[in-house]
Length: 325
Image (cartoon, rainbow, N blue to C red; front, side, top):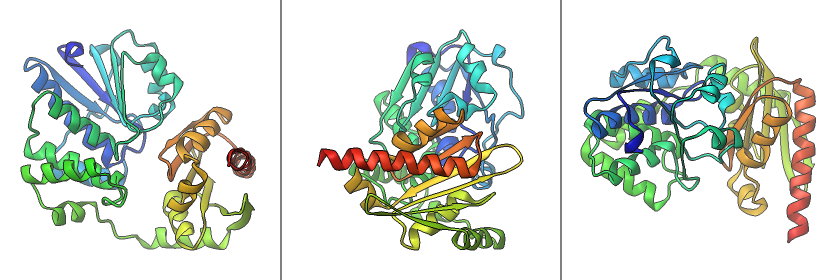
């Protein structure tokens, strides 16, 4: 990676950037200067950031560009982005850009990224992209600054669900970062976000509209909702579902959130990001990616047709797995 660092780099990440995306982006911004003191990097979020991420950016004092031109840069660094479609209109710009592109991610790689990347650092065993970026710091012998340590720690805690999905390596990384700056209580406090009335109502609507399906002996819950899809999907798993799919349209696009229980993943071996979200992204000309038990889709499609296709695909995956037992 060091050999690719030029004078000026641009860091991009996926739409609705979460704490892992902005944490890894900020840490990479600082790493560019550490690797080459004469170099610099800017951060631009083509599809904006979540409310939580905006709060963290403000708390850490991180500056991001309001607009950017790809022609002004000699290198693209793209963390936490599994497919070019997650960059919205910038996806085509990145694909056609004749400058080096470095992707760093912990999601299953998509062919469009692998095809365009000059360097593709992927570790699906990592809890988060921040965990991978911290490993890069250690590889080069750099100690993150206190602000960088906080940014990395927040990303790790967020994507590991407050360490519920942590590996031994994750715990070690968090322990080392805590020694640089911060306290666990403080970090968790920054990530805390009390659900508002509108989110609570959305969860109740999702439960009211839910349909139950038995697929391969598992309880699959589907529902429709125009917002808070991920929150509602988590709630439906909490109600007893093995798999939850919440789909809805807003003014711009169709959005879907997929969740499954750990038991479902352990026994079925179905990876929601790789096996469901990514193929659906291809079929419906959208962007699908995610983790084994949590994934999402953003793009085109009719909610009813999308749900039908999810159930068809899920049935086929479970039948395939059953035949292998």
